[in-house]
Image (cartoon, rainbow, N blue to C red; front, side, top):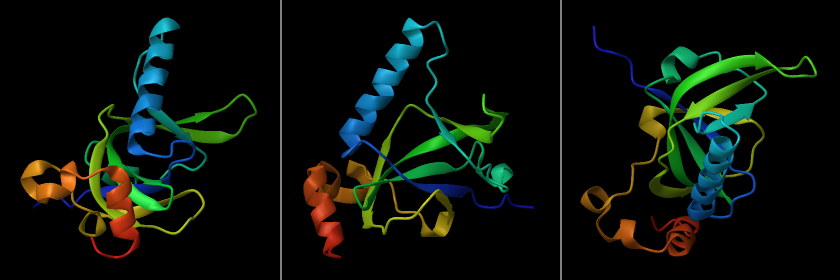
Length: 150
């Protein structure tokens, strides 16, 4: 029996205003973890545990919406539930340190995260699959996406 397609998460990226700023934040967090003697693995902590974690872990990604545009993704290697110091249940999404840009798509604001089916996920941007779009500056890709041109 063939494996079911992966399931992804869609999440607003709070703070960074570009993919470059997200990558810089990941590098800064890695450097801080190394300085403190912790594992330099990127994680994102969220309040809710995905009930469909089995469809995500090791196969799915978190797709980041930056300033109203879905721009990039990181693979999810683990989902680890825990209880914080205040007794509140949370989970850590353990992410790949590599940020992959995707074909930009406008996205309205929302709270929390949403599931994103594989067939609805945008394609990765690379020179082989996206032609000149991959070399285009992020701001231009974002503007073209907001106009519905890409």
